[in-house]
Length: 402
Image (tube, rainbow, N blue to C red; front, side):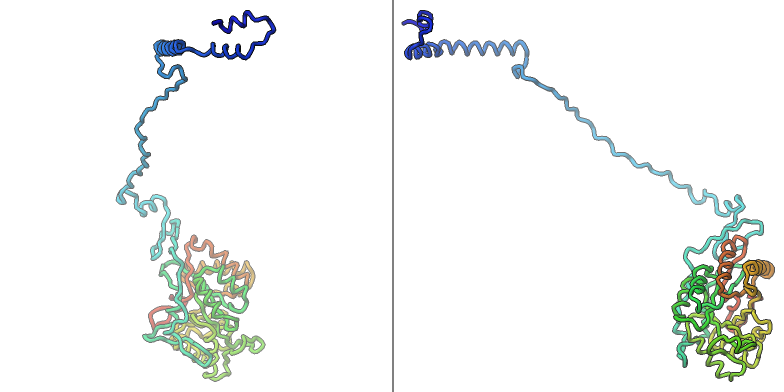
């Protein structure tokens, strides 16, 4: 049988093969069993040769080798432990520090410093809080409303409503500012700008006095009541309604005083509002002082009248009485007020204590506020007016012997 290749070579050029010739050609290209076996053997031999030559079981495929190393976990950072504090016994004492530095710390509760020492006063941690008012033990109903009374066991409003005093010694000044409760601006300024040790006296004519006085006491100020009293040029100078008069009968004056006392609660005593004529008239004034004593109150003379009989009549009526020795704004000028404040300092150093009074003029409030800022650095303390009044029940204290 002839091969297809022979037909191709012997066939004339350009002659197309017949269909039979194409079939025979395809059949001639089909591998025989012998050829298949030979191809398989040849593939096995080639693969073994590559394996032997390269030593790569992957037959030459790309390979990447990664090394995994196991490490011990890093220890957690250890917080630094502070060195133990030195025992208290090894630390320098406060006294030793003060001695070495020349600085003396005056602590609450007392203690005097040498005159040449620099004084640093450590204030109390919390502000002084006054007792709430009204105290039911010290109130009775009167014709005009609630008024003070002496409590059981002779408990006095003077003691209960007073600002606590730490009792330190040394030069001290008590300041009474009067005329409050009428002008809202001056009243608010006095309450907020003046040191809490300054005592405030309220006239009975202001509106909403109960709330105003409560706000002043919350700020630490003692409160006193100004009772309108007859001046020498009355009625040209008129303190206002319910004025106590030398021509009035005693029951009438007592009733007028009761009206004033019903205007607000929490006051420690009575202050004259004008009153130069009444306070110089023993017959009219002594019954008033007896009523003040019976109510558990004190009486403070503002020092504006040289004819006042408050001291001798107060001793006779057994009412705690004090009189201001200096009126700061008798001459209402800044330089005059500053001069009187300096005089108060001098008297406090010489006598130990001085009681001064002032009115609620904006100028006066401003000068007192400025003057008091570094007062303790100058070795002088402010104390409330009650220091001049308080003592064992039934005793009398004057401004000269607080």
